[in-house]
Image (cartoon, rainbow, N blue to C red; front, side, top):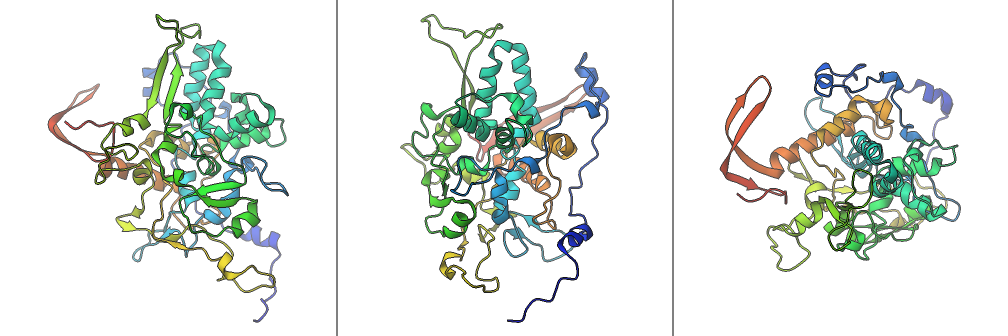
Amino acid sequence: MQPLPPATKDEHQQVAATKEIRGGPFGTARKTPEPNFLSLFKGLPLVPLAEVKRFPGESFDHITAGPKGPAGFLTSSQCLGCHSASKENMAFSFADGPQPPINLSPYTEWRASMMGLAGRDPIFHAQLESEKTMRPSQAGFLDNTCYRCHGVMGQRQIESDKQQPFAHSMVYALPDEMDGKYGALARDGVSCAVCHRVAKDGLGTPATFTGKFKIDPANVINGPYDQLITVPMKNATGITPAFGAQIKSASLCGSCHTVILPVLDQEGRPVKDQNGKPKEFHEQMTYPEWLNSVYQNERQPIDQKAARTCQDCHMQRTFLGQPLVFRSANIEDINYPYTDYRVRDKDITVRVRDQYSRHTLTGINQFGLMLFEQFPDILGIRTADYMYGEAVPGLLTAQSSGYDLARRETATIKVASLTKSETALEATVSRFPIRRRISPRLPDL
């Protein structure tokens, strides 16, 4: 093997000469609120854009393993190096025209989902701050309860390290500040190490609802494959990947998508029923609704033809009707030049998967995604993918996937008439036919 030619520039010069990575063609944010919005919500205080509180950039969200392996949760920055796309893997390329490739890697699609953005979600933060303003006596309870899902790693880690609850103020903490570790973990949202460390114990039962799932040890990551290699991940992070059937079950999702909260009065005090028992409010029932639909597969009788789990719809295995066949990671494998002391070929040969699931995790929250597109500086997100900058930005793919889910996968509804006035748009939906395709919330009419 011939030696490589000497570099003509040192690393610093190369970085300085690098062209800008493809960013998102996102619209410029307004510097003042929309007038029609203000007229609808009269009395809303005007806050100049420059005075809006900003999240620390996601480059600060960087919690790594120590010499003996992870002591707790790690941020997704420890996953993106292997689970991003390349020209050869996890990218959907087009044969004709100037269309750039679509990045279908686990990291990029998850990062642009409302799961990956949960810790920075401005809609969530606005709702949380509104609730605390109305019930200040319950501020601590609201913070810790809501971050149990939206900023779960920060909430779980401070609970484990210091036996104290998570506070909303921590989400703005920088790395050199006292709560910097917990802020970084919380801002990373429903991260890789959350779902892939959920233990099977108790899933699908009330004991694990409202984000109370149990977790497996920090040095184990559960995945959907039972034949895998462990050396690369173990050497890089101290974590051993393993098969975990629960990662494919709807009950895993049901822990955070079944939210049961106490009923509080205007003073923030728990409301009790006639028997003196605290009342509860079922704030989110996505999992129980699915469990009582024709799509469930967790209790008899099961309709095998109709059964669809959360993952079947929100982590699809196709793109533009094409089945996806990829390796789930890009590593320094046998395709790299041979080096001394390299591990055995079989330990660095990643299998090609014909059951490759996208990490879109998409709903139809287009408004939320648009906020991230308009205000990336305020919300602290990157607008370019420095691992694979040639592809369409993840946020645009997420938005397109959300539209596709709504238009083609959710339901077929016939609109009988449409009437537009100066103040409203009214639609009459015919009683028949409404054909529900996947959504357990839509009844058969």
